[in-house]
Length: 318
Image (tube, rainbow, N blue to C red; front, side, top):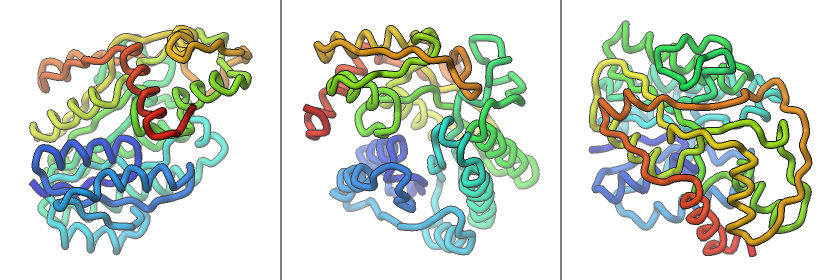
């Protein structure tokens, strides 16, 4: 199948593109290579993909509606994996406008282009952050998710709602996948696992909100990709799935695992959690298990062991 992957130079997008290429699909990868974090990391991800003859990289921006339309007409994808987005809850608090421009308007540009090109099965990457702090745990896909705590999850929820309207009006097959705290090789350097690893190795002070008592449903990248592929191969009207591990871990325990693996102590500074941070993220993955056969395989200690091995293999840490 020919598949368009947006955000193909990023963390999840590049790992999805790699898995698709390995199984024999043809991939067109769109990315604008923005400098929210150092572009060298995105170029490393691209280099990993460009050894495959059935991969094509397109340097473009979702905010360019004409360019997105042209891309969909030329590529005629059988499916679109929409991973591209401005990420990070905390960055969105200081920079809300770009989240509306990229995540909301950019997604709308893509959906409109897809509508005129088939439409293909559209898989939209969302986030477990849409549940906020008022949703009972574990989070079910049927929750209203109407009280996001920051512009990032608000923009993702808007993406979901626009996608539903395109399904309702034009029968576009749409699958929304809510990712929970994804980590692992090729992860972003601004994300907690990478930052905390560097803090421990360099002896810098490591900041933990609420003394590390926040709980996060850390989900290893390979499990996320397995769930995504299962959803890609199961188009069925409009569906929403949680893709998490289903086992929240306190952040202090996460740091303690890093200390053990790195054989170094963490110098922890406990600070109050900002208003953008929910006390827990916790995916109910029952629907994905039943309908997609989704079963996370990698628990946190093994996932962090693989992540640290990758950092060292790529000479990103000592």
